[in-house]
Image (cartoon, rainbow, N blue to C red; front, side, top):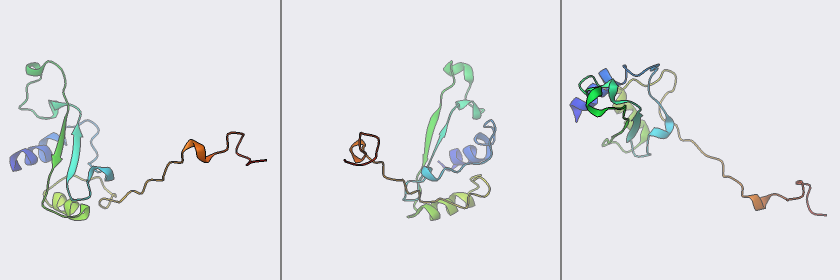
Length: 113
C-alpha cells in the first residue's frame, strides 16, 4: 500500500490537469482518514487506456492510525501529500440547519392576522 500511496502522491496527482494541490475539508472523516476521488485512471502511466476502452475514475480512502483530522493532515503532509497552499489543515465545517417549509407563513411571511 505504501508503494501505491507513493505513486499517487508523486506521479498520479501531479499529472492531474490543473492540479494545485489537494484539500477539501470535507475529505477528512473526523478520525484522521482521508478520501480523494480521481476522475480518470490515465494519471497512472502503467494502466493502458486501450485495455479499459473508456476513462474510469476511482475513489481512494487513505486510512491512518491517527485519531483526529489534524493528526491525519500532519501525517499525510509529512508523507508528501501536496496540500493546497494557504489552507492550513482540516477545518470543522458547521452546517446551518435547514428550515422546513412549515416554519414560514404561506401568505408572504408577514405573520398571522
